[in-house]
Length: 251
Ligand SMILES: [Zn+2]
Image (cartoon, protein in one colour):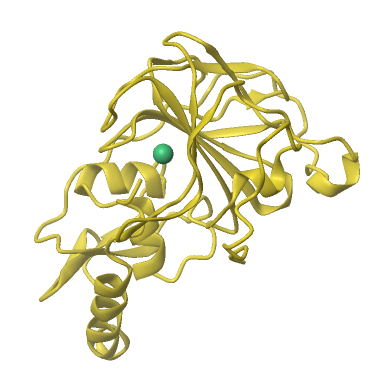
């Protein structure tokens, strides 16, 4: 996939262009501030960066970079989010809270401490590896599997996005301990809801061909602090599948 990487330089340029007026400006009106290169969206309750990105048709990766967010899953109500290219504030779908038992949530332990390897979400041939793909960069791996194959969570975590995204079709994003998120895209159907806690191995979606694809497969990304990593460096080695040694991990 390319839409999370295509506008890095544009976003940085926009950020620096916007920076001066940003720091000089007086407090913004509550809804949004119009800029020459975009607007500021003020985060309201129930919104997250993925939903804001969907509303404005800007990838959350682009938003994260334009706003220098280390972790796009951590934004707060009242925060001003620069939306590059936007000309007016748009409504953002909010998340209905999941009805869950009122259990005390203990902070998750780091991934490293459980000592168990991550789970392959589906088994299949790697159609397309992580790394440079022509002029673009593939942020994940494509695992071929028949339509409808169950997709399992690679590790326990919290579903922070389960919806559609341009190019990705039906997509589920799970936040795990240790700053790790996993992304499962092009799903035939998503089987989980935002805010839901999932266990390792839980079936969260089914393989499909939604979004920009040529055939059914799972596009899997593993991100650490929002930087895409080679999933093959995180998943247990299988026969005949090697991490792309020519691509250094991005931290
Ligand atoms: Zn892919």
